[in-house]
Image 1 (cartoon, one colour):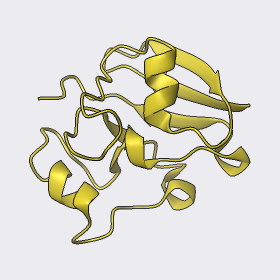
Image 2 (image 1 turned 45 degrees about the vertical axis):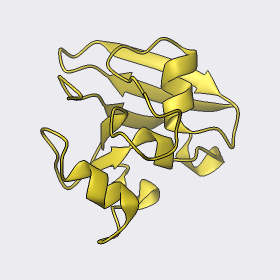
Image 3 (image 1 turned 90 degrees about the vertical axis):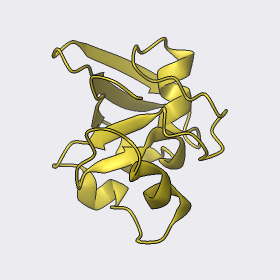
Length: 108
């Protein structure tokens, strides 16, 4: 199991656990984390699972690749930063155990 903590914009923390190989989007949805909608079903088509990877984790998670579908979607999301990622594109494994993700105030 991989532990992930989602931090809401108001500071509330939502620690969850999920099997390795699942995505951060699935971790949020399966554990009722508020603010993560994932409307497209994890197909990288909507940006409603936008998260900010905590800076201490960005080297392990990775930044966006210019020209990727994920980068193209995030350019239309509000409040993006250099640490912005789509939770549906973060596949969890043991090296990400303890991951800290911040949920933006809104997804639209």
